[in-house]
Amino acid sequence: MLLVSSCSKQQTLQVLFQKSTPHQAYARQLHQAGLDRRPAGRTWLTAAAQALRDSLVVALPFAETGYFRPEHPTAASYRYAVRAGEQVHVSLSLAPGAAARVFLDAFEVVPGRTPSLLASADTLVLDFRYRGETDGQHLLRVQPELLAAGRYTLRVSREPSLGVFPVKGRTDAAVGSFWGAARDAGARQHEGIDIFASRGTPAVAATAGYITRTGETPIGGRVVWLADTEHGDHLYYAHLDKQLVTAGQHVRAGDTLGLVGNTGNARTTVPHLHFGIYRNGQGAVDPWPFVCHSAPAAKLPGGPDRRGEFVRLRSAAVLWPMPGTEKSRSSRPVAQLLRQLPLLVIGQQGASLRVQTPSGQIGYVLAKAVVEAAGAPLRKLALPAATELLTQPNGASPALGALAARSAVVVLGQVDGFSLLRGPEGLTGWAII
Image (cartoon, rainbow, N blue to C red; front, side):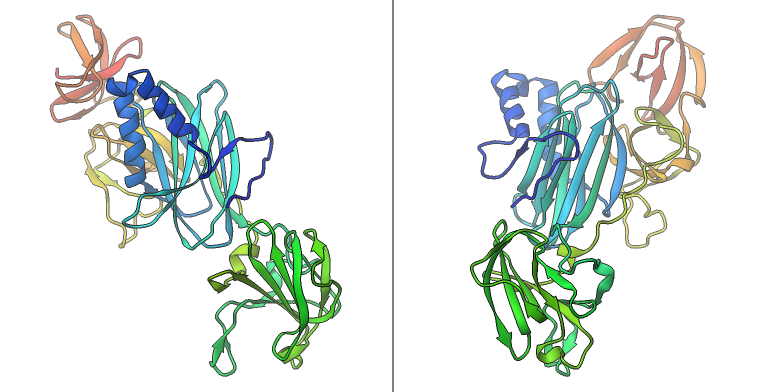
């Protein structure tokens, strides 16, 4: 299920139980208007489907600035790993003047299965959170409406899903023993985490719920069981010096349940709270992702903003599937790129640019490895005759305009016999010259 909050405005989220997401409703509108049979509508729908099959791999947290192209509908997608109990925070903002409707959809991705929707939203300022229920891969699709143009900033980070740390005044830095550690000379494994604190420190409800039972056992000592009313998890507090709640009692996040001690089989250790999480039908799960502090925000890229510009490489190089993998031996390149190939910058992340080749391939190159195509054109010339400019470097692509004979143009790049030309009024397209 979803844990949702808002940082600035109340955001509207669509979840699995509703009839359709904003993205699905928009696609239905395209069909009803007959736009799904026109080139732009078909391209938009194809891009949406392709984004679920072919995504860029990123590590959380990450931040990227991107660019929407009005003349070529696309969808960006990002794949990232999530652990059960983590909360994913997604935030997208549009640059001033970029008044476009944008659709955000988060999916769980399992090999061999259709991606399963987790959360979605559409508004001018997108900011929502959702909780990962299992370890796995998630995919975020970002797609604007048709003819949308402008720049955006996307951030995705991980946070603890439990709003209150189980021991008052402590943080995850106080955890001294983790999930899976050997116990009883290896006869069993640790099914929780140990949070060390002085005797008598309050152990508090990490979420709202009700107490299902209290008692004393040889291993756990004085224990308290708290049922999370929102998610159905059972939180286990053990080795308490005192219990301050009773079965059936409803508690709010932050209410004191007991006091840290070392009862049970912890009597020979210093005081600490054993904190565990159990799920119906699954048993114990690792509590660490539920309480681990938020990752620091990823830094936005510095340097010039090249989004929407054409660039070229200083020398032949490789197009990589994710940023920061230029020296990785395990990452396979997307393509080999020639120096004269024009690349459209559609995003920036750290020291890398996300670029699109004339054939539609998308990947990353280092920002320091490129030059601005307009600032360093391959050549300048006056057109000998009236020239039609095409949207893509192939004879079957539609025309976007024409330049008169003797028009002064610059050549931004070349591929397969076509040249990317920019005219005196900024009109840019492909032609054979």
